[in-house]
Length: 533
Image (tube, rainbow, N blue to C red):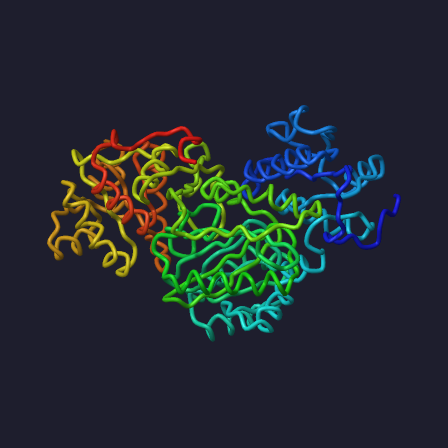
């Protein structure tokens, strides 16, 4: 292997034509999909526009990046360290771009740095400071940035002691995870013990436990920085409360329900991290927000899955800007005023539960979606309805009642204003005993139907199979194994029978509000993308 350079900093100006290698994102899978390929293609196109020679390596034939006319030379090879080093040895590129290929490319970059490969972008040491949980926590402490309480453990008893100290629920995971894999929320000691025995007890990996913040909102910050100064950024708001993986969440941009002070604090924290890590390129920070108090969950020094979405909503190509930075161009601040953003964009996840036999169609901290759509509208409600229709969701009709099965008393109480909105649209309800009793006591017409576990008929499954419900609203009760079992069967049957299913109360609330504001789908304006610019 030829040693190219011991250190390669982004500040080295590349003004004359150079040979640049871009590492792709590999096969599509949950956690790494077409969003990263969009980023890689944007890099290639900007490089060619600037007159540079482009080389791309990827192993996925389904991508645009592997079209032969996109780059000057394409290596259709596996993304392994050995193969990438072979390509580098043959081509001897002046720079290697890895920050647009997701976690696969970033993991490769860490290993490539040991071979003195001229990596373009934020320094590997900064990436390590973010990916190593201990180092990142120390960085946040040094900068005065709040974060959820957490600790790592190798002994199970220590893990139990910490969970009981901070209080349930807690988020538990192995020390090293990708896209939320093997993560879970434990609401009591029994659930925590079961998780540790099944997911961690058979491995030699330590476990990380974090305090799970109830009723918090998750906020995403996507940005591009140059030498530690943010050039352009976007703040996306999750519709669902925290606890739904960012890849599965419904995201709105610009944020519609965040306090102005929350937005200001998010920007301040982002600039602190960008400066301290000397970021030059794309990065993503995930926050928890509750009543103007924010906590940092994690920071990724690479392009995120939402970069194509934010680039199109803001009409600012974040990857084009990052590429110009990598090539030595001095960029001016391009931040937009939130009030100047013309449209509301909603990104909704696409799921494949109907094709995955026995999979639980529920949302949680592990990513489940296999795609996503982005839709635009003059209002949040318009964009949201378009996004739901685009992912194949069938809007409910008042001709049949809504089946409601809610797990906890908190969920039942939170559903009251949602029920009121649906009721005003002409909907009635059917529900299992506890939910039906609660809704009836609060003034709603709700017919009781038997639970599955009661062995009496007609039960909820009978109702779904006969297509006598227009939609199913089901939220799981994490405290009860019986409810989890019944809930799974209800959700699964709804998917198998193509009955619309909602498993999140924030989505149910927005759906009801959207239907009440837009009662005729013909009112949804459809425009070519270019018309909105």
